Image (tube, rainbow, N blue to C red; front, side, top):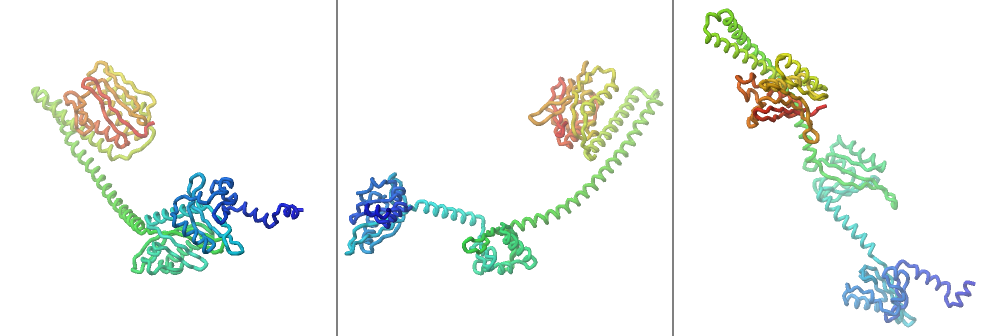
Length: 511
């Protein structure tokens, strides 16, 4: 039935198959007469060029020309067609949209029985995607080469089965010291590695290769001139599906400078630890000697001072009636001076203990501690009308002995310098400084001081008031500064002459 229908239509089964192939080819096909007039095109032609069959039948293929090729190009193409009967090459044409595209074109001449050309058949494929892929691969390879060259990295390929080893120029130079005598096998590479390291390096290469795992290994090679070089190799095994051969693709780079720096650092650390131990021992001995000297001097100084004070008191008590008022006044001054010097020595010892004592860091209730100090001060001078305002629940983490001495100094100073006020007011509280810092403060409404002199406050023996105004040795605020410093905080003051003063201090581990 099918054969009868085909016969009636004048198309044989073979011709039908040819038409199916013609229409379904991925390549574009163009069929012209001997003069170049287009007789028919296939669907591949329309897909590649954008022109339908109706738009090109009866026209010349030159409608696809891009203008990139010169006239000489087409003249040579037609000469080849007429003499050889076929032409094949790459050409740039233009789609209907105006876009240029590269194509691989093959043109064949169709001849009759007498050998005359009756038609031309052109078959072409779009090279845009392939050329784009080739360009991307080329650009990727160029970037890779630049990166490898910039990093001083070489590449290598190793076939574990045959032992064959291939290196690029950089890898050969790293392994062999030059490109003249590169190792051609893995065994040749091992010969350049010290004997005691070969088992480790061989295992580092072979074990992950068998397990198809990426690996990294650092090893040392000995160059022909006897110099050492430390290298790092990183690789990935791959077994080809086509040939079944397993290959290891890797890179290699020089880490000799890094190795030498690390060794130098290790040696420096070893000597540094020894020097630190020696220096620490020297410092400990010096501190112990200084402590012994301080206590010895303090003891030797305080003994005659107590003698001066004691014998002066005896003179006043037992022989005062034999002296006139000037004599008794001189003795009282001697006693006062000896007592003041004794207090100064005691305060110096306390200042020394603050710097040298071992610190303990525990939670401290500063509010409770301040209340205890205030009670002691009020009990010593119950006749004074002073008001203490102590904020509740102020806590910190620090050494309780040092922090108590700090509060005794600050509250004691506030008590002392507000003694001239009929109604003294002393506060202890805290306030936020910035976003993350809390400052504790002690404030009084006493005599205050000139802020121009604030730089002297926390230095030992510096006083802003005379001893005839307020008693003191000038060591208390220096002790406060050292205590705060040992806790990792800071201390400062704000004041106005005759309007009181406020002393601030921070403790990083505040509660």
